[in-house]
Length: 268
Image (tube, rainbow, N blue to C red):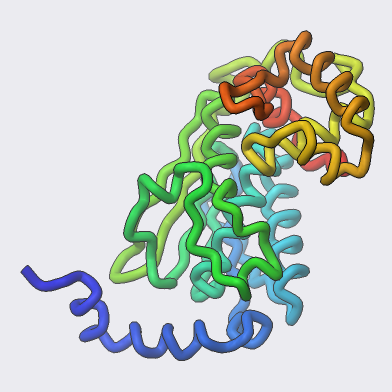
């Protein structure tokens, strides 16, 4: 049987992609990201081509614009999950990236013509990353992006799927049922729980890191270890955070549901 990588090389695009991937990311991202929004009251998509010479600004622009359309449909897809999937396009240098919003905001499909993801199951495991040193200038690159997105989506009764695009590339699909088919979590915001700003920052940090030691949290947030332990005890009492066998802390399913219900607010 022919090796898949050898087959790809014969198609002629593989060498070109290698050439482009050796360029600095700010230079390799030359094409706009196409956003296709299918409004609930129309069968014709609204097409926008989004571009910025700054890669960081491009990721922010694409995420915020997509999320704005999701809000128009009262979609429950979390901002954080969307952001992580959009940032994952960096692995494909945003080559021929297309984002489609469909089914009344229940589905977001993010497609590219990059090198693809060979180990799809491993890509959804915390800690697995193929991010290069160059990529880490723009994203965290610690292997928590897609796993975090899947956890947030699953907490809302949805799914995150990774599939091959036609001929080459990857398609990541986010599906979350609408409010008509499910109810929001009973306590879906920090205000309902009375969380302080410091506690909110700890929750968001744990979402980014997947799990962390109290000393690491203290270092990242620049607060004293004693304060971190006190805040963690409160969060554990509320059922938002739990300890691991290694002495680290991570979010519970309830904590993930709260984070998923935050929308686009930035606790930082």
